[in-house]
Image 1 (cartoon, rainbow over the protein chains, first blue to last red):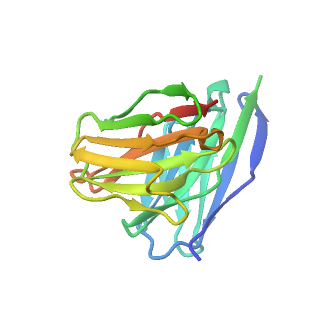
Image 2 (cartoon, chains in turn blue, yellow):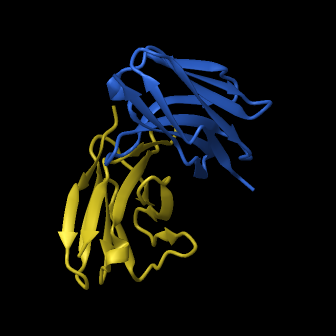
Length: 111
Length: 116
């Protein structure tokens, strides 16, 4: 069954700290993996997109990694800010035919 | 970057009435658009795939007579919730696939529907 599982379900960190979110998937065939940030009441915004051959990709303070062999990905947030408080969703593109969504990790950054 | 807009951003309607939500790709053509539904603290759930000039493909369990989708042009898809009920209250998000950018998919800002 094609699934995307994320952990933790929720996370609370202090402003300025780093954190890492995890994503495991069983989607096949694989096209690419995306991380989205979704603020409350807003649509998802793309952070990174990685294909099979890419191991890491950065977007500012966000760094995503991909291990296609173990089917795992992580999103590392450096020097967190209050505005990073949001839901982070891992999405796997099933060979251009469908997007399989994870349930997301809710991140709360407190001062 | 590619922009997808939705209108309205929020709407309140009475039970039994119909509501139309528009999804537009502003700077690219989208032969395919998608409609999602999201309940609080849950992930997006695909409702239907909308293809320009043809009938939409609905996911299992989604009533096509209740959620009418029209994709009349390469930049516009509409979702009409007919005879809305309180359980239809949800966050509806559309996305558009840009065939010119390796089929990248861009999401709209969402529409909050509240049925009273």
